[in-house]
Image (cartoon, rainbow, N blue to C red; front, top):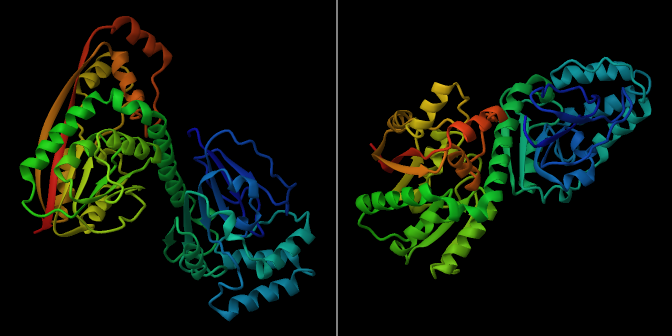
Amino acid sequence: MNNLQYFYHHGWGHDASDHKFEDFNVISFDRGYFEKPFYHYQLKNPAIGIVHSLGLHLFPEDLFEQLELLIIISSFISFQEGLTDKKQLIRLKAMERKFPKSPEAVLKDFGNVCGAPSNEKKIINTSLLQNDLKKLASEKFDIAKIQHIPKILIIHGTEDRVAPFNQAKILHENLSQSSIIPIQTSSHNLPLTHSSLISNIIQKESRKILLKKTFAKSAKSYHKHAHFQKIANQKFLNFYLKHQNKRDIQEFLEIAAGTGIFTQKIFPHLMDAKCLITDLSNESLTICKCELEKENLFNPLTHQFQALDIDSDNIPDKFDIIFSSLGLQWFENLSKSFEKIYNALKKNGSAYISFLDNDSFEKWREICKEKDFPYTLNPLPKTTDVQKILDKKKYHYLMEKETVSITYSSSIDFLKSFKKTGTNYQKKRVLLPCSIIKTLQKDFNKPLTITYSITMIKIYEKK
């Protein structure tokens, strides 16, 4: 699917095949209950770890150190300490007593409790199964092993009869970088029963990691090559100055600030206000801070920087104004993002948002259609679709559109501009074949004028 690696570890009574994450090239570790143990891996790219139940306790410790994201499914720190019903402990003790004489029967009963059929493969290591069953009752996971991982998602069924939902809450309380995704009316064996839902979550998170890496890689060159962005941000500043509220601004927030092109433009107009500048990429924020320092605009007492993913993180405070310039087209869920932004406004606050819309790149679309080239640029939001979202939420808003035209020396120069600014990440991973690139170099080696279409919005209060 992409340049990420995925590692999975199953829970007790299962093996490496007990999941249906078929959209990913998953390296599945095997404890060795039914097949030979398998823990071989070679780390080449950023990695995502996926663990189910006891798999959190069995996952290779050294690999934890390398993860960008850990997805914990139906798991626990301490099975016994997190129980909310004595019947669950009684069931576990009964399994321990019965297992030496009837391991297959215990596995079958366990499968029924899990909410999915048990593994019917022949057991090749009964003693290991028995010892790991005892671990369920006695072992406590060292949470320090995963506290350094940048992001952790805890996916748990609300009707889990093996590890009750309370276990997810305990994990979350001990992991400040985590968030819980409850799966309503679902039991324990989610990698099998809810593989499509979990796969969708993995896909979304993978896109975020790759986008973050792409922006981080180009952070140093962004300012130099962001020709369109500089013009567009000036237009966005003019939009704000035209429609600003005549009131005292004490605090403002900027979302998706990047390397700070708009930040530099807005700071002189809000010098006395406290601010929080955020972006998906810490590398971009570092450049942003440096650029502000060069212009003598940075005040360490009132200016803060924080990595923030609008799709999954909560906005940490309330603000008089929220800005987001040319970031919305990267958001996964526009409706939820607008709701988060609106809810983070103080009374009588306003949000100013600009984005690259679907009317952009018309000339390039025409060339691709005429020459039967694949159109590899990311789909952009339609202004009318954004209007429908805002109308449905009954927000008051103002909306204006602007265009920016940039002439590139050639078609190849236009396409290279995305790489130079880190905006070359492709959601659908559609690449131009080498044959088409050669055609562009040969037959389209002449100036190309591209028009960018920008929608700018001011949101202020509900009707």
